[in-house]
Length: 174
Image (cartoon, rainbow, N blue to C red; front, side):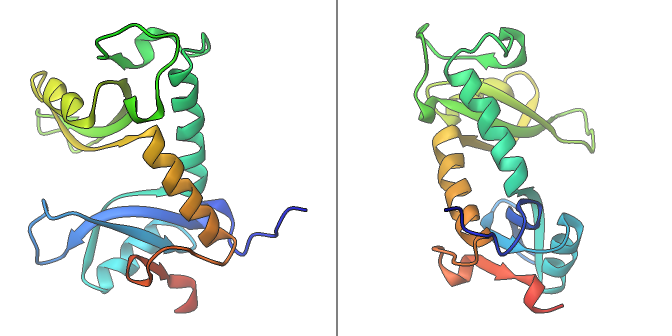
């Protein structure tokens, strides 16, 4: 029997950012329930927190599906659609070696870009991309995304397993 969700997948978010007066490199992350991502960003700003990245449970599930295809080297995903930086050619890759990354080219573009990679670790991706004039803001492995999706799903079901200080239900304030 499937449990009825307390909140739809598009209203449960994971985010990262920083305290408004703090250095932007001191990133914090957490979870929030809100009607829209914009509502979450604006409300968190009122609490003195600047969100720099936000994804809904629905988006996390979509990203996991793509990363799983890449990990299993599924022909639905063409090799040009991700960076293969792994030193070995394997029939499939472990979940901690398949990543999504977000960043921007150092040409002062205001827009962030998202991509996918297979690599030994997240530092390897960051260093490789930095050498190609791309500043990485975040990297997340398939393994970590699966963990986040589990926590987001628990929040969506109405019984979060996460620490109260990393979770805020803005719908309680509306």
